[in-house]
Image (tube, rainbow, N blue to C red; front, top):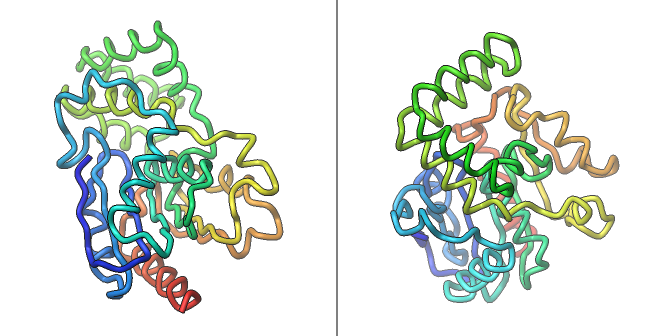
Length: 267
């Protein structure tokens, strides 16, 4: 996986983009960290500079492999004073998987429109089931038929207009469809354990911030808020008047402010 490093400090911020995005989305944030911090932005498999063809037949990443890779990256690039993660959508799911492994030195999580709290049954069927994978792969190869199916689902109100647009944007063209297939399959095991999330001593809510879109049809705000224990809701959740894509300047300003607060609290 390709990554870019900013700074040489001893506390590392790892930035993970969402599906269809690249590490470049977080480069500006990472480059603004104070000198005593290090920022690393990563291109996830099949995205940006990690879009290597040899990954197409790779085995699915296990949670152990993923967390070991992140920990090794932090150790090799200045994480002696700990590390934190800022992650969007599917990147947030991967950040939660890393947190579940209780890695040494993980201090803070900032999650934007996080995937992972709600298990997607379609993802499970199309990636973990042999028949489902075959159907999924064939559907992604049948470009025109898949596009027609999405429009039909919208017509009968099985998906709303916002979700239809997101789906169509992510599967426009045969290459985009196969990218979706390969990404889902390689990440099929990277789901945080639901029981761990529910445990009182599971996710460290005191060190977690979740930013949500009020109009998000992919990761509904209400469903994510149900996971947050009542005493933490006011401290953990920030809600914005956007849909799923929170990669906008207003949200980035808030992320930058929160990072500054974390840095101040550590000094």
